[in-house]
Image (cartoon, rainbow, N blue to C red; front, side):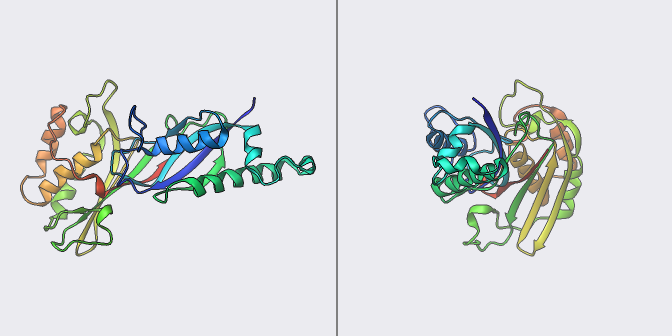
Length: 271
């Protein structure tokens, strides 16, 4: 049985989900929704592997996942897939029809807060998680005391001024290759060493502060913990050099201010 390996790019609003990763006894996860649907479409169990395990409430515009499905099952999704005349179709055109049918089925049956924006066949060696080279996360903060009702699910309604110059000073201490054990929400059995290539802090308007994080990988709660501590700096409750002290402790709990999940979005995954 030949298996076709797919790479898909997914967008989702994470507000009502318990995160990406499926969990025993928990139905409402992004991975769980995708696997349940694909398994029904293919009439056999299908595993989906994501590039990143986003937390409960975290969003994505560029999550990447991979999965394998039996080639013969793809033809069952096509209209008139059992017609005898199908044998006259060129293999390349047949593949295009199979891919289009699967893409359409996924977006038809997925809930409205999850969308597959791209679906392509990948090499047999491709794996969405293990071959990741870098990721880009974005965190959005509203500094106005007036709530942004329309976008409230996609930002931290902080409601106070922030000194972005001081925040940038603190962010510099987080860039480079470090042991980020202090900025990890779980007791990790594996290495907590990561490389953060850059952190950009901008103000697109007077009511918004945006933090963009670029790195080779991020630990559980890492971006939210870094954001929480940088906000303390921006609010004047902590000096920028305190970020370096917290980082050097290499101890879970050293960073104890976790920014809300609502402001965080996985923007892009690179391979």
